Amino acid sequence: MAIGDSVKPDETIDLKGLSCPMPQLKMKKKLKSMESGQILLGIGSDPGTKNDLPVMCKKDKHEYLGCDDSGDGSFLFYVKKGG
Image (cartoon, rainbow, N blue to C red; front, side):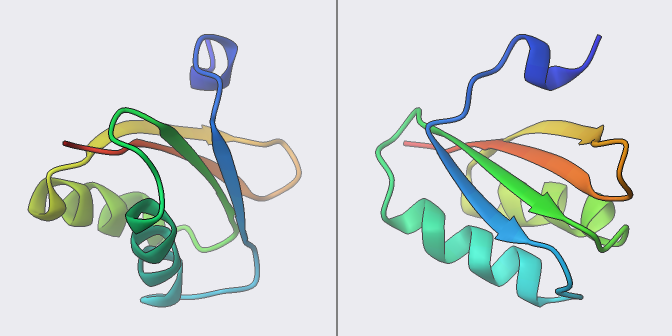
């Protein structure tokens, strides 16, 4: 089952075409403007983000919910803003 089947994002950000470290930086900036507990969906094309985003989330005390393949070559990254 895909994460997106059970998780509904509060905000979505387009990260397609960006490579490390830009996807993480843009996610981090967007999360700052969100409320604790809200979910951010990042749609990106850089496979390296699969490794980098969980590290950023742990460091910044957000919850990395996981990643789905979109089917069109991009990835759907789900992050829940920490308190």
